[in-house]
Each structure stands twice: as C-alpha cells, then as structure tokens.
Length: 159
Image (cartoon, rainbow, N blue to C red):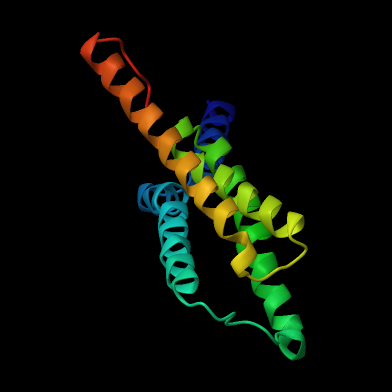
C-alpha cells in the first residue's frame, strides 16, 4: 500500500513538472502574433520607407561610411537574424504559406542588396524593388484566390 502511494506521488510530481514546461496560452498567442503579423508590418513599413526614398531625386545616404558599423548592425538584425527567428517560429507553429511570404520578400531584399553591392537603398535599386513588391502582391493575390476557391468548394483547409 505504501509503495503504491509513493508511486502515485512520484507520478503526480512528474506530471506537475511536465505541465510547468508547457507554455501558457497567452504566450502562444503572443508568439503567433509575432510570427504572423510582425513580418507583414515590417514589410509594409519598408514599402513606405522606400516610397519616401524614391520620391527624392537626391541620394539620402551618400556618406554612410562614418556610420558603417551601426548600419551593418541594423541590416544584420533586420534582414538576417529576424528572418531566421521567424522561420523557426513559423515552422514550429506550422503556419501556412501566406504567413511565410514576408520571409520570401526579405530574401528578395537581401538579393537586391547583394546584387547592387550596397547595404543601403540607392536610386539604382528602384526597378528591382518595384519588381519585388509587384511579385509579392501577385503571390498574395494568388494565395487569396486559392483560399476563396477552397472555401467555395467547401474543402477543409487546416489554415
């Protein structure tokens, strides 16, 4: 009898430890907000920034060499570490393709910066940026149309 009670107490302690490891529901909701909507906000803010930049005829960032370290730091955080953390979270939460489109956009931005050998936006990047934005909007339209078609055919979708 004593052995069974000790076994029950040990199992209850083990279950208690396991439930402590599970994240709280509010933490999961916050993570999903971060992994779903934050990349879209970053993408929209960048679109606004480049539209303001390209409206000016003069290069805004002609002499950034004296501030090169902070520029590299922000570039590294925004375009390298941020997508890596997003990708891990989106794979962990098994988010659908429409939530992964901003990562494709950030990869395109990185390709443009490598292609023009500059970490800052220049006026030469205008057509590449506009092409990338158009491509992203086409992908969003395709995903929206395919979602509508699945919804009309009453096919179950996990997203």
